[in-house]
Figure 1 (tube, rainbow, N blue to C red):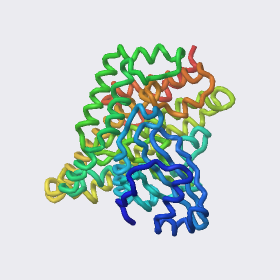
Figure 2: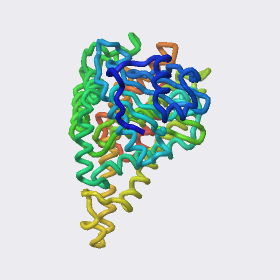
Figure 3: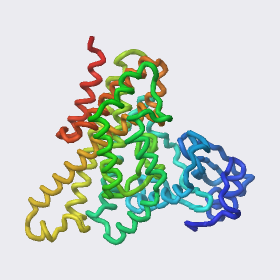
Figure 4: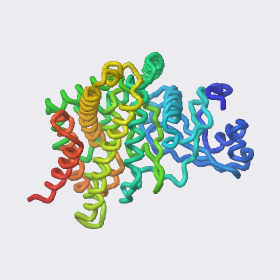
Amino acid sequence: MNQHQKGEGGYRPFDVDSVKGYLASNPAVAERLGGGAEAMQAREVGDGNLNLVFIIEGPKGSVVVKQALPYVRLVGDSWPLPLKRAFFEWNALTRQAAILPDRVPSLYHFDETNALVVMEYLSPHIILRKELIAGKRFEHLAEHAGTFLAETLFRTSDLHMDTAQKKADVALFADNVALCAITENLVFTEPYFDAELNRWTTPELDGPALALRGDRAVKIAAQEMLHLFTAKTEALLHGDLHTGSIMVTETDSRVIDPEFAFYGPMGFDIGALLANLFLAYFSQDGHGQQPGARDEYGEWLLETTEKVWRVFAARFSKLWTEERTGILFPRSMFEDQGDHVGAAVALERFLDGVFTDTTGFAGAKMIRRLVGLAHVEDMESIEDPATRAGCEARALQMGCELLVNRGRFSDISALTNLARAIRRERTQP
């Protein structure tokens, strides 16, 4: 595989016809598909905010081609965006694949000039968010997600990674400036003032949405989390880990789309996923044929949320004990001196800090998905505006609580209990 093959004539965006010719000209990919362009079927399926995504099927097999556009697809060419994000996505995917190959798609080809990645077509996998909206359960999900988080975050941190390699990686991913700027603006700043691209369910949600601009505690907390986001280079993050970035079957889970990857605080990735599970939970009152119809499913969502954290913490703790070979908390200061208790106390304090960060980032991510530019289908698919706004208001309340009071929650069950309490208020007169 040529990881940096140059496209002739510079960058060009592909369509369903030209992408077939492009793949046919790549011997390794053409062999995987099993024929020339005339034997291929292609369709464009990109429904995200940024990129083109093609599924190409041939007589022998199939692949996905993901190509960056030089602008934000959600907005148009009025918002330019560097093509180099494909480079960062490829580098993140290759690192994740080296750590946990069963949790990411297989990789076949990278073309830096044309800003595209050719990878495994995951089938019969479906985007997790769509399955949650449909009320489906995945008993493996928490185990897979928690393990992915623990493995990728621990192994790219100073707890384990070679120091020189870590610093070189921090420098490499620090250049993902444009996509980090999207997060810095859309998540931590724009929801709290009259930004042009903000939107929400209006007029039903006007009250709580507009109140954010005058809530000093929330605004300060959001900027404190932004400070952590920009200053804390703990580990290589996926950078946009939500339920739309995970594809699932009954027995498998794969994490996709790490184009926002950078070195940042561990709690950002964990908090992003928990935030989306909480949003799914609060959306339940807008799904089902009658009030309360999805209450049992909502409980499963909260149980899954708790298990994601617990699996993460357990796997991270095992890695801490067995594979802590980096410069942080060296064994020479603890276990080698017989101080196993000290190592355990250090681990507990470290995880407490990650949990506090996770809680704050979860709150910030919930808020941005309710009043910022890019919302979630869990809420958007609720047809009745009043019902949707009610779900969103409760989620917004939780987001603010998590953001402002992030240091006051003792454990993950405190977060799920808060969600239950807020949602329970919907039935109160």
